Image (tube, rainbow, N blue to C red; front, side, top):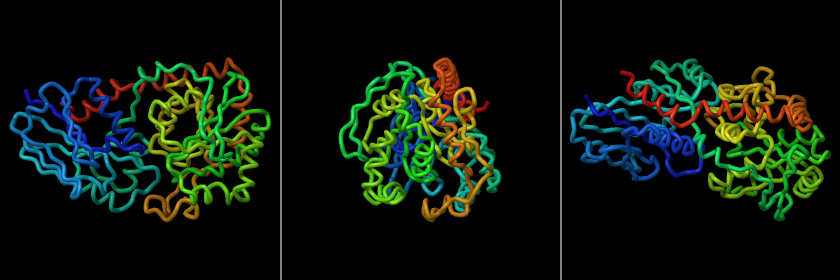
Length: 401
């Protein structure tokens, strides 16, 4: 019987979405005691996991400048699967003295994907892995002709079940330019949290304007927006100040409507604590390759307000979320998002402020019984993506026989 070994190539240490998902998949494989190796795509770091995995290799090295991976095995009796979890332009060149199967893991938010992606994937991989049926359809419609398999994103349910509900949250509010210490009186005034990791596909001005139109801030409810760190002055100006009449006008709007904005470097634990303080996770993102923040909110029993479109439909439903309707699709607005090759000429959800306002009003007036029911359903849905479950799925795709 051959030794079955996976080599996972991805971003192990960054704080972006790719890195969070890669680290989760590493934990998935560890949870089922798989024999595997992890290569950091942004450094020369190589890690071995599982009993005697290292003994099967004389060398595994990574040249970051050329994205070149050299694999030298001292055991011909191995079945090797190399999974590249990167954007196609960053897939490595692989040299190996033993046969291996090459799988690529990529997600896409809008259709079609760039032609360069299609060319690289069709030319260089045996199978394409992606997160959802939505993403699979995008790749099929874009012209991918290799087999496509779905591996959903994962979550460590055990670690989330250890969190106790936070009743206080302290941070520096960059809107008011002062420190804040908020207190959450459960089932009274509600806190809505939105996390913006980048500004692609996300329209914070629409989010804020819909919140203002709902007038729930005047009733004592609050909106917390977590921005990337560090945040540039030009980003604040372009996405916030100029959309609301300038800095001082925006500051006045925030103060009068309980809108708080923070931009801090938070650990995973701090992020989860911030989520656990809120009552609803709130997103108006127009297209998603998944939505890890929403998944983490579900694991904490926190219902979500989200656009009913794209990959998050895999796990967000009317039992655990308030869904914002999408009225077909519209062309991506390049005046907001820049002339990116990923989005220019592409289409995404057509959301309307009126529908967002209605969801916010429904959440603000939700009864305790309904909230607790949605909270329970949120946790139940997240459990379906626990690390061991997804780990076994990864392994079954890597080694189907």
